[in-house]
Length: 353
Image (cartoon, rainbow, N blue to C red):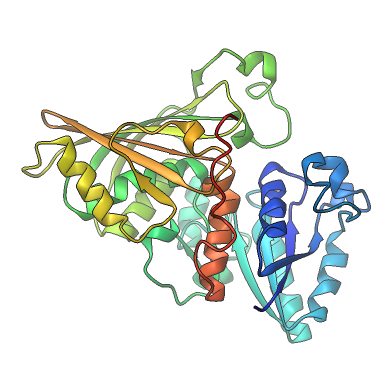
């Protein structure tokens, strides 16, 4: 098996930490360097103590050092966990360097920079011009299970909230099971806010607490609408209320839709979901509502559904740092490299997190 050297950008954040962990356990990947400008020269294990067994002496590197690594291999991998708005410019620079030294570079981005197909859509949501509009057509963005194949050399993974919602919404629209006006209430763990402490992630504020934020105006809503239409062919009006939960990792989404067909039973909706995800080894459709602890620490997601009158409810859970971010990125990487899609990302949930 070919072993691909991997460079991780934004190396000191939570998503990058999970990328590093997945790279360490992947049979076709080997860490070449983890980039953190603020921590360059410091041990990876000093920031991620749980990774000491797999990175006992490796240190973070600066961006210039990462550029110099590209010439050492004919085919390099770049996993970016750099912040929104910063990732695209860094990726562009790495692609330019790779081209100048005659090496192939395959990129998967966890940021929002390549989630929209055009620069105007990005600017409308993020309020700034796209930093690398010339690269947009080189990236596909979708939940991997929703795209049969892609001709782009690079990929971007949807956001964690977006992935949780799309897994439940797209089958409803694709099978014409529900009206295209859908409401979602979803709760996320504190790791979704990143490593830097904020008022809403500080432990005394979050412990034994839950609160809504950015009600009906969260930036993931237009992302979900665009990606749901691309995957199902049906336009979507999404009404999304996100919540902060008193736990570290995981997302639980409750999706409310008005049924559109003659479906009358829970069993029919669950069968439709199972049929849609027949070949999806990382998406499990259950007979009863899924629990977050069943997927926390894994790259899998779980769904279930129920019906009452003209209302369909789908519940969807995943680990925000794995299936919703780094795990989804490695899943995309496997596809881009022509490897088995689940290679290196099938470990079961921790269970008692």
